Length: 292
Image (cartoon, rainbow, N blue to C red):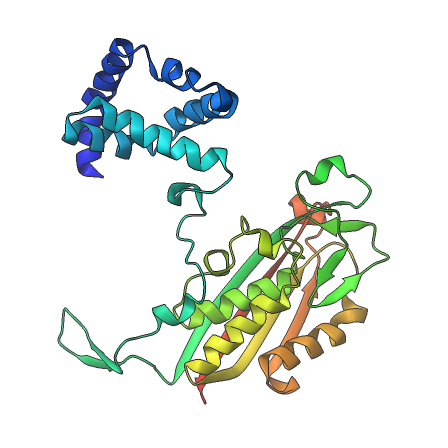
């Protein structure tokens, strides 16, 4: 990054001069009639992107104008066919079955500064998860954008009669998402957005129990179990008191634990901010894992 920062001003001027000598990048792109529209738009987007630094730095080190054009056009081809190049994916997207790759490789590790040897798997682990989602009227199709209008799902309970829905790539269950992230965090694993990125079409409208199940599977592979789950759901509406027992039962079932180890608290936001104005709902989860 330091090298790229140093060479960017000179490199930008260099690319500019190369573009002028070669009729400009846009001219080169325009010479490909069947690709013209999309490639021109991609070229503009690429020049605005921070990733131009890497491409420019590479081109300067090679000392060739053609390298810059090839790198740019290669990226544009990826965008044209609808495939995301690595920089376009959610940062850190890990792909399939990635959780296991983050497990400790040894049973003990040494503290670099002191030389003390510690077990890689302590007897207890604590995690925290948080999630927030926008809510919109389900009949406001325009406001949902690329998302499909759907009912609010909270703790695995669907609120069909509630007029607002949760805007999300999946079903937007804030309790399941927060609990999933709390387990992953306790285990020292990547977050839910890296394991299940919201630009992956497989998870469009998905039941969030799939994400929750995977976190529990990873927890059990590491020989941990639930010691305690404490959920705080914050929503002005819908009223949750009458449905908390169902939500708790769902968490107990998925976590493969007992009711005495799970608690759900619900509160409003006193009509303050987006949550208090029924434009969003949010959730915090604290979790304690113990060695099984």
